[in-house]
Image (cartoon, rainbow, N blue to C red; front, side, top):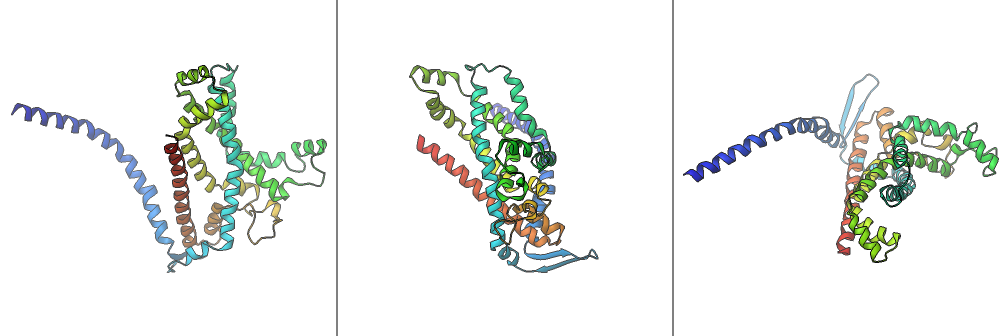
Length: 320
């Protein structure tokens, strides 16, 4: 009898303690249901309708089935996906390489880098600058009257009639460079934290065995950093798909460098998917088309994130 009483007392004590945890979780779930789940359900619902607002502020809603989804898989929309992924890849590849290099340097106590705290702060500062400000700074610096334009002209890299913002290639590189400068500091801090969590005895044992710095990085650092690399790649992929502010500012919402498209395509060469989604709402007020595009983006993001995670886990299992 006493054992049963003690067991019931322990259960009631645990429930009494755990209830406070559930109570503190209530605000999160309420916020998620109101501001995330319910808008998501509404977006999926509207994606099957031709829903728009007239100039008299009257809502027109007509069921259209899969019409909005069929329009998404046209050649013009696929071009937008291509533009988005090109801009992301151009910025992400140098971002992950530079961040890995800097994280390895700063986390290596044997190098004894002077003023490392100052440099860590400096590389993270661009992450605190708004994208609008960064875009305007770059736009003015590389304009034909800007200082960097004159610098490249004096060095003989470009001619006086060249315009960085009038060519697709240079515009893509500059937009990707802005995203690179904004986020490589954050990526460096994440990777550096992962490297600092590695036991120093592993590096010391590798040095005793005669391993080179590259072998230590490839055989010890990278495998242990895989969970953080997966996180960085997935979050960067999501951010790349949602790219909007920088190309919107640079191209003034047109999606073309200085209004030009040297590829002579029907779709602008710099316009991203989110720019098209914004235009569907602000210009045509077609919430149905915007909802369908949002649902497709959600599915594409989930599939790509799953494949990134699966590929990293598969490599990890093969290494074992």
